Length: 348
Image (cartoon, rainbow, N blue to C red; front, side, top):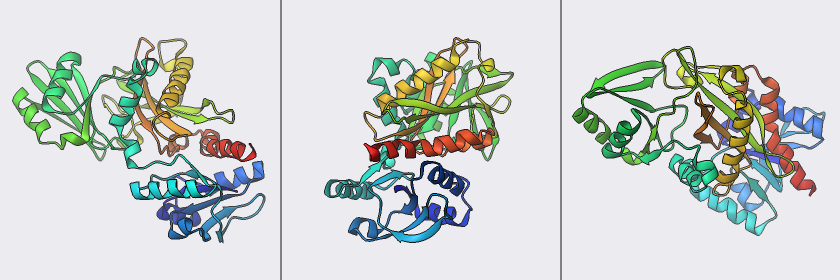
């Protein structure tokens, strides 16, 4: 049996069929096809004491049911745990034969930590836009150098609190987005420094804005699922393409973007797909040296010269991109590839 660790809230959503992320049908199909039971459960005291946990079990060719079970020896973590819970799970692994794959706390999702890890290696560093911890001076420095920058939270998600700043003569244009509404304001150099100084700068990074390939007046961004294969090597399971709203700087569904199948026709470089696949595997290999991972989602941008740029890593990749793009089979394959990898470890 393979375990899937989720939050208590997600556990109840799976049982009631109200989750837009974790679909019971995916786990039931996996159990049927591979003849391996899967149990979804959540963090609880019983897990650490060795007692039975409250689980939702998918058995081959049977209806799923909620029962008390012994936590499996192999569990894939589909949630970010707190630091204390992470330490407790590590201690549990040391004193038992249990393995928790993709065991991560909030610290592991720190974007600055990802940037630092990727820039330590020359192969991956060339794909990382120049990035600094945010201060008024670092922002002005990168704006002078590149003309445009992106400011983003170190631990943000869904493009929340992401800001674009562009130099416009002696003034600066600031773009932000709240509830899919684009806000634009023009400020002086002094006002810009005050604006940045008023932010919780320790929680942000400032980054060179990548000049991504466009479709008309919309920018593009690739979402790619890079996962451990049964061989232990990193491979690409699926990818899609985000197309922003006209003249927008964000490319997320929550920002009103459109998600479509990945197609090389959107780019000028002929070998762009091979470059995207190769880069994502290099990024995954390097990042996994610092962070426990068998499943990584990457946001990548491609410029008109065909260069692939790292935008960010998604350590808790929800895979809904493929649902929005109409790639239902890819959605299933990306959800269950970690389970196939784990099943290979169980047999080994």
